[in-house]
Every structure is written in C-alpha cells, then in structure tokens.
Image 1 (cartoon, helix red, strand yellow):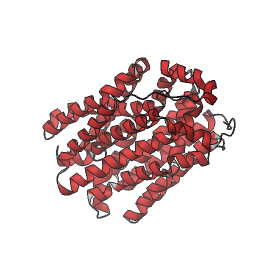
Image 2: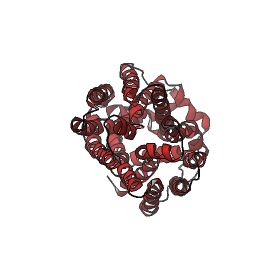
Image 3: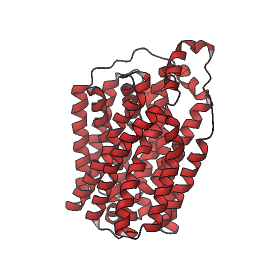
Image 4: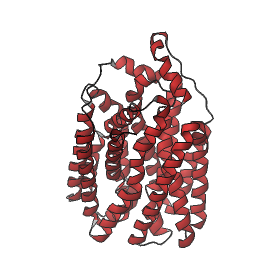
Length: 396
C-alpha cells in the first residue's frame, strides 16, 4: 500500500472525526443549549441527511475538477466548520455550522475510495478500501474519545477545536502526499446514470441503508446510553469510547482479510454478530464490569460494518463507474444514519434510551434478510469493453 492510500486514510480520519465528535458530547450539548436529547440528535441526523441529499449531485457537478483540488477544498471546509461550531452562540447556529461541510462531504468519500482502489489491482481493492477505512476506525478509537476528553477537561468548544486541528493536519498530508490528479476524460451524465438501471446496485444500496441504520440507532446515543443505563460519568464515557474504538481497529483489520477471500461471509454474518452483541448490552447494560467487556466486543464488530458497507457499495460494479457509484455510497450511508438516529430518538422521547437496542435489531434484521437477495449485473452490448473489469471484481 503506497503513501497516497495512507494520506487518504488520514483525510477520512479527519472528516469522520468531525462528523462523529458530537456523539461523546451530545448530552452536554443538549444541556448547554437547553434542548432535548432527541433534538440534539439532529446534530448527527441533520449532517447525515444533508450528505444523503447532496451525494450524487455534488460529485457529478465536480466531476471535471482536479480530484486533488476537490479533496483539499473539502478538508478546508471542515476546518472552517469546526471553528464556526466552536463559537456557536445557539443551537441553530451550531446546526448550520455542522451542515455546511456536509454538502461537500460525499465528494471526498467518492474520490478518496476510488483513488485508493485505482492504486492497486482489482483483486486487492477490498484491502485498499480497508486501509482507507482504517481512518474511520481511528476516528472512533482516537478522534471521538479525544474530542470527548477535551470537552470534559475544558468545555464542549474544545471538542470542535481538536476536530478542526485534525482536519488541518489531514489537509497538509494530502497536499504533499497526493499528486495532482486531473480528470482523465469527461463522461456524459447519461453514461454515469445508466448504472442505476441495474437491480444489483439497488440491492447493494438497500443493504447499506439498513445496516448503517441498525448501527447508528445505538451508536449515535452511545454516550447517553452509558450515562443513563450504566451510570458512567464523563471520564468513564471517554474511556469506554476509547475501548470501543481500539477494538474496532482490530475488527476492521481482521474483517478486511476475511472479506478479501469471501465477501459474502461479511455481508451475511455481520448483522447477526452485531445483533448478538447488542442483546448482551441490553440485558447486562446496568452492570459496569460486564459492560466493559461487552463494549470491546461491540466495538470490534461495529467498526467492521463501515468496511463491509463500502465494499458492498461497489460489489461487482464495473471499474469505469466506480467514482459515480461511490458517490451514492455516502448518501445511503447517511440515510442510514438519519433513519437510525431519528428512529432511536423517537423511542427515547416517548420511552427510554434502553429500548433503542430493539430499533437497531429491527434494522439489522432487515439487512440480514436482504443479504439473501440475489441480483446479477447485466452489461449492455456497448459496454463490452468493460467486461474484464467486471470479471476481475467478481473474482475479488
């Protein structure tokens, strides 16, 4: 794996930390701005919904711009957003500050994943994705706990300042490590959208949506779950998030090796594994010691879902459509975040945070069921030149 892929992983670490940094401080933000916890959840779901709506359009609008330039502009936007968030005077200002970078966020993901995959042979694409997605894992093991810790040490504003500094570091890493990447040739929008006629594409996207909704129905409110159910204080929540993320790095690495050999294993059994872990959290969530072990298992399983989702998004997709197809992946990822966060927030509002586990299980069960749906890619005659790409991806 070359330095470009690792620089892209650092960029993912930066943007993911910015997206998820509110998870560890959501109860604090709700109290500070005088809103309910489900309203504060819009700091996650509002960001995610914006990404979902803007995904394919922002990537299409920028498809003729140098890819490195786009990556740098997106990171610069995240730096600015975190500064504005740190100085927000009320909840609406904070929400708007969060939404600004979400508009451009999908372009970063589509370009980063596609650029990483193009650095290796098609059969090594899952490993390249795994390395880039390690940045996401590290955001949970370092980024989220670190921003939560500084918020507990100083105040909530410190969380956004740290996130901004991480994005600034990622900006300079990409500036020096990634070469100029001009667009090879302009493709028609009609050619891009033709891939959406394939049933396989929508099965992939549907799986992603249900799986991510199941993951974030609980993950978005993890700090509140630890606080209300396990009765942890701020420092203990930071430690639990650290354990959660540390186990996630190992899970991401191991699952990357497994699905490089057989992707169907990951697609089929990940939802079941996460359901089992969350059931353990439901029944033993009130006990501190058992929850410490459960949290590590939870993190090990949960974080692998990001890799599985991204791999599913390009499963059996021709290489010439990768960037366009990848532009929809963050949309369905974040639709999943939106649906999961909103559904769980509704349960919290009318019941108790303990019951968000069942919301998660419902979504994950849907993903498991969809893993049995088979859909083949049909190639039109005028796309015969891309058959080698399809064969290589199927072999991978």
